[in-house]
Image 1 (cartoon, rainbow, N blue to C red):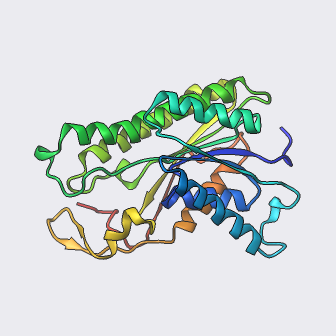
Image 2 (image 1 turned 135 degrees about the vertical axis):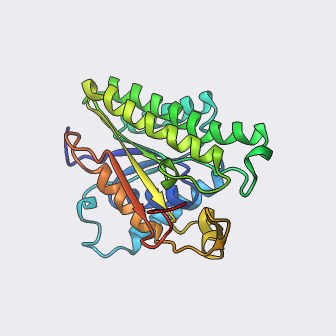
Image 3 (image 1 turned 180 degrees about the vertical axis):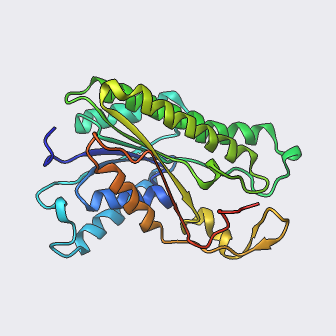
Amino acid sequence: MNAHRTKIAIVTGAGSGIGRAVAVELLRTGWSVTLAGRRAERLEETAALARTALADASPGAVGEAAGKESTSLCVRTDVSRPEEVAALFGATRNRFGRLDLLFNNAGTFGPGGVPFEDLPYDAWRHVVGTNLDGAFLCAQAAYRQMKEQDPQGGRIINNGSISAHTPRPRSAAYTATKHALTGLTKSLSLDGRPYRIVCGQIDIGNAATDMTSRMTTGALQANGEVAAEPVMDVGDVARTVRHMAELPLEANVQFATVLASGMPYVGRG
């Protein structure tokens, strides 16, 4: 593989939060990125933010991006729908010719604060459809393309969560899918070995996004109390993902945990 060519990524859930931060980080450092998400206008906003970040960067700030031409492609996608996932990967292949990275990020927490016994089945299915079915569909499409392309291989990074290890109260659907995602990560790591397909997982705690804004005002704790929690800059997550993504395929960060230092995780519950 030519180490100097522009590398190609797909980022799901790229219209907001962690997905947006990772997409901008990759684009500003020389990757070409397909931005996938449910809302086309939010994807265009992400692409515009990346262009601004690149334009504002000092000449030496983007390092290896020098001499590379990064390009974004916006594809409105519901990752829970097989036909839309197929269209996403087809559009990426038609535009860029190959795929080096899938950041499997799209996800939803579902209805917050609902006791388990009151959780509607439709809400459960929505969380499972997005977080687990969507991750499976995108990983399978990436796996097929990485296996068939020349040079063979690529990297998949799944967005797990602290909830892949330890739940929050009243989060059964989200926690179940994130635990399942860990199993998917391990299986992909094993099954991809003959084809130079590697898979890792980043487990993130309290990155400052719209999804976690309530943490700073108060979140339900395991002892029943409501307490404010610290958050961290989402840019620190994006830089960690890029580090994982830019390793040679002979090396892999199997699991990385990146969290706000003072959040209730170690000893939670």
